[in-house]
Amino acid sequence: MTTQKPSTLLVHSDYVPPSGFGGLPVPIYHASTVTYPNVAAMRARDWRRDDGYTYGLHGTPTTFTLEHRIASMEGGRHTVLAPSGLAAIMLIDLALLKCGDDMLLPDNVYGPSRELGTTLLRDCGISVRYYDPLLGASIGGEILSNTKLIWIEAPGSVTMEVPDIPAIVAAAKARGVLTAIDNTWAGGVLFRPFDHGVNISMHALTKYVSGGSDVLMGAATTVDPLLHERIKLAHMRLGLGIGADDAYLILRGLPTLELRLRHHEKSAMTVAAWLSTRPEIVRMLHPAYPDCPGHSHWKRDFQGSGGLFSVVFRSDLEQSRIDAMVDALKLFRIGFSWGGSHSLVVPYLMQSARSAVPWTAGSLVRLYIGMEDPSDLIADLDQAFAGLLPS
Ligand SMILES: *Cc1c(COP(=O)(O)O)cnc(C)c1O
Image (cartoon, rainbow, N blue to C red; front, side, top):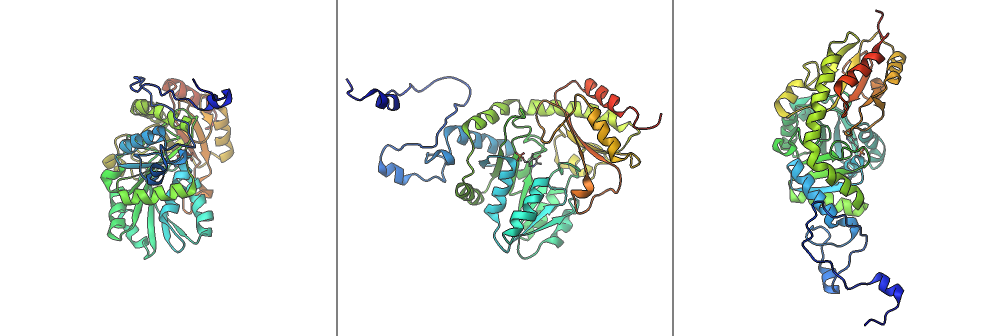
């Protein structure tokens, strides 16, 4: 019979639930503090390992489980999770670069990654240079003695050029330079970065892996334990933990990932086939189409194309008319990010986003094909296109 007061009993309890509960989902463990059985155990615990718990920021059963599942999804061994895709990019940059180092980014890199490079990283004394994403093996000529990291994005998330990844990786390896890929477009299903020798795979789980348009998360995955340790150390020093509920939402999306991606892909191919016959459109920036730069690389290295692609409109259609067409769409909603059930559209002003744009005229519109029936999406595009060209 305890003599402790009710407020103490509300905090402490000896009851331990029995083990062996057979529910299928991974339990959500919320924790900042984790406790130790004694001082010796506390002192012995190493936060770099995932076979013990030190503090909620560095891992819980929920987040460790998600890390292991993302590592296997990417074909890697170790994953570190960050609160957004952009945070994972920053984590990789800060883990691997210091003042005086040089980094190469593709000219079509994800916009906020470019922004990070040209502001905070340059302010830290890191040199950031841009390369033509279709350079291939001749990227070797861009590598300087202080170049430490080459980013690859495949394909570029707006202009969709598909780089020659094996050629870039071989040139980097020959000079001892690390490569990191932004593998978001391929959704963890359509491209195997480590089979191609890439050192780090970054993934915005926010997109296809979540599939819900309701959570932000990023991952940095590696095969090499020493490289993982560098990223893990930076992760701990920067305090980039993720929340248990967010981890649960991502875990919930994993079993249906491939099914969803294949469905987006099938619908996107149907919509793209319609668009490719339209007189308003001069170029399909869809990796499965031969007029997409790097199409042959996609064909050689990828296992599919998912739901995201861009189109270029005739150059005599001014931007204001393209914007009005986008405004007229009803099922396609205007919004960044993608990977969920809703179809999305964004008109991009390319000339301001790049050092060099591969075409000189024509507005670019990016489409994301969601879960709606493709015939309804085509009807929506058809009504919005009406009047763009004189009949
Ligand atoms: C969305 C995205 C990111 C960033 O992910 P967030 O979770 O939104 O920060 C990075 N790279 C690509 C290619 C993306 O599409």
